[in-house]
Length: 189
Image (tube, rainbow, N blue to C red; front, side, top):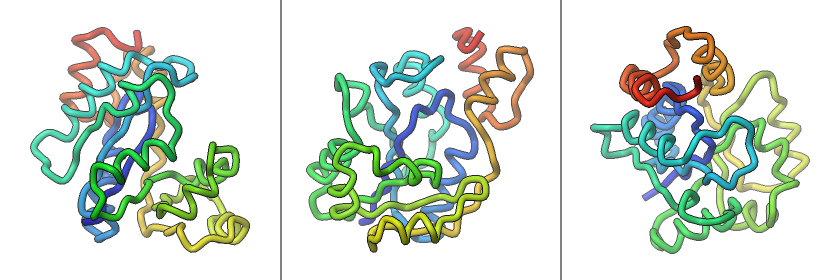
């Protein structure tokens, strides 16, 4: 089985997060996607508590057996991407583990802890963001572990969604049940 690990803050998770995962499955890049939200120790402005981000992800993916949510990074003090990927390889030793990332993340990969190990050990499924020149990025990294996907998501941003929610604008980029959860718990106010 091919398992995609989809890391991020998911602050909040939006429809495009789900669309990307479902398209990766539909186009046979992977058979299953596991969302792995960052823990509370992740140094990011406006990051709400992980329990809410986990719950919103669960709400967003309900009734879809190909999508899962893991609290692995939430339970740990500080986790690097290579550790997360190694963890899932230990859980699924007979399966292929892929890391799902945007081209914006690929630009920064050389700053990641043990990035060469990641590129040598795992495959990266890269989703094009904005007008990034992916061929140039891949050539500079000189590895065969990077797969440029044929997934072209709309430009949706959790940052912009949070700004809209602060201004009391209902956002169409959110699953209705996630939007209700945000409202009920008075998040991003």
